Length: 212
View 1: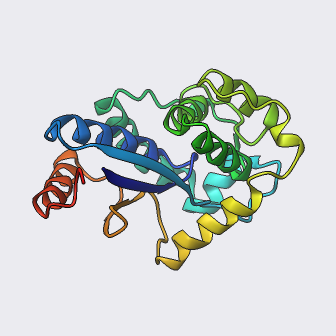
View 2: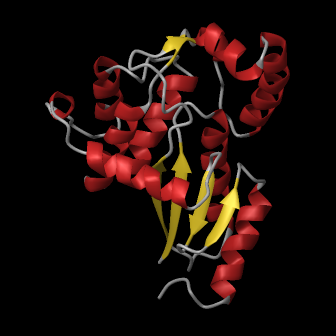
């Protein structure tokens, strides 16, 4: 069984694109290759206020101007369309603090539905413009992925674990996401083309480290 650890943040559009490209790659490799995908936390904006901030102000601060972002946005829309992702950047009102979302992803990992919850969060934020920094939004997004959160956000369960996992990513020298770690050894930075993922997986398979 191959393990694929993905360090990502829900507010990163390239992470959503990278998820799609990895999925396509896994669909192209030999059927004997079985992979366990594990989502790891990496906050792009760890100092973001708990309530988030106005997205326009955030984009201006991050990119220097809206014009600079518009150029990047065009590239993202094109890449998203190729992966059947309908980014709705214009509808997003706030850039959230994603720590609660990462706690939810951690919880989903304990219940065997992590990938489904990640998918729901990506769609919620980028397609539906949902405020994923709010527990009131996170609870129904989790439920549609099959995870009942009940009173999860009333306590601090998962807080220490998410901080520890994030520290591991930074200790590995990760500074941008998505970042994929195959079998705890081979790293792939960025939402690379599908053939890059296929090649990396096949190289591991050739070394005889898959399926044992």
